[in-house]
Length: 91
Image 1: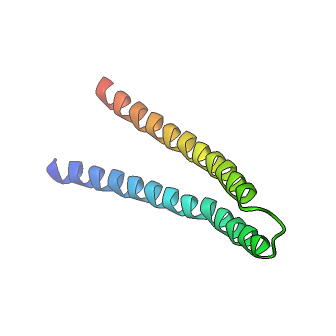
Image 2 (image 1 turned 90 degrees about the vertical axis):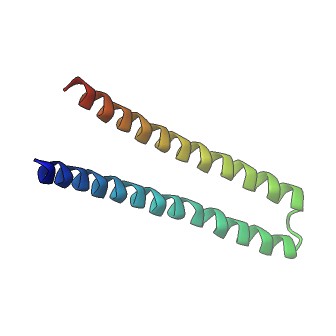
């Protein structure tokens, strides 16, 4: 019986680890365009097409959008975890 319980928990841990790994990859993929845009805006700033205030405003705007999307995804994951826990308590 202990072996079966251990096997089930290992399987659950592996699934959880894969989800966390996917989330980390998604975070990295989400921030790559921000860094690319930052580089492009800095190059334009060196050419003095834009002032620094405009660049900072654009970066804050993009950063807030990315962070709000990440917060929504994390909240969805938390709700899913709570539903799993509540479903197990009923049994």
